[in-house]
Image 1 (cartoon, rainbow over the protein chains, first blue to last red):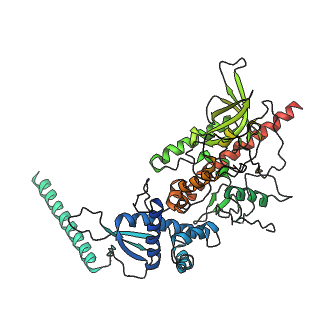
Image 2 (cartoon, each protein chain N blue to C red):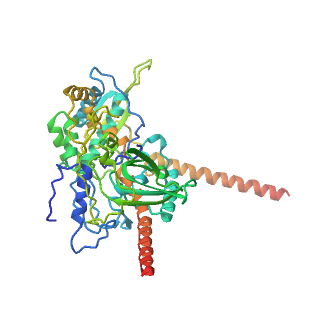
Length: 185
Length: 308
């Protein structure tokens, strides 16, 4: 039966979701995988920016986004959502943080709620590398430089003027060469 | 809304059907597919209120929105959730073809547990058609490959036939009894006593008591003694009587069970289509389905007038 499961309504996630989940080996088996990931999600909600290895970060990002999107869609009076929050957040004050702080923060977001940035890799690079997983709107200074390029910045103003000068000089030169050609004929 | 229904105790499908009861008011029109009444949402599925068929989006333009129950009535319009097979263009073309077929043949609303009669074109039968009556034990497939299985016991022999809903050989699909059961899949009827799967081949369509609600039949089926085709004790079936097995079966079932899957949010995500996409798909499809429904009703009325 490859019909979509209709028992739950989920919101679309704004992160790339791979078709197959990544497996993490642990002594408890598949249950242990979810336990490890719940520890990661708890830490993410608690500290709002964590540094960890890339594979775990990528998996935890999906689960964190799902938890927050469920909380936004259903609210805290919804039994299923509360059960999920209870399982995924190991500290109970974080359940309050999820519904009272994160839900209002992300209510009107059209983008993802988390950001996954590649961190430093140890040379020679046989490992998958580290990553920094953070919730958007966190109080810390941004990790990535601003990529804006405003036209009114001084160097951009000077560059625009220089371009205009160059273009007008080229047109003059072209005009002079056509005159000389027509004069020559 | 005075009728408060405690949704926490219900499963998702039950609470969806209770929402039908909310909409039905004695003076309201019995137009079940178009909901014009605000639905209070506290049910398990977490559906947002659909105040009218025409909602307005952010820019203030009216947007046609299909009623939320469409996803249960037409589940084959949703594509296969496996990411490897998603292709928006293919799905759109398939939906167009499905609507085209539905304009020719009436494919009624049905659920697992409904008793149906299907007539197929059969070159080898004397009157070129063959009719089979049975209970729908399972339905699946997405798009044009949607299928359902009907089961009946004929001359003490259990017979199951898989019909492809959009196949060109299908001549007529009638729903003789529209109802639901406590489970989504009734495969356990194969191991149940034959009386639970026997339906007369000349069964007449039954009149529905309430056009707005699809009843849930809380029947608990008795199984034959073991051996069975599947390990029913491991499947959390609601519609079977107590299996009365030795304790070792239940112990092994516990050992083998995967209780963590209940919390695996990404597993659920990969098994379903997100709500926004569902809304888009059904908004596309819903106006055409409504038009087809209306045309059929008019044709039927005209037909009955001509007979008179």
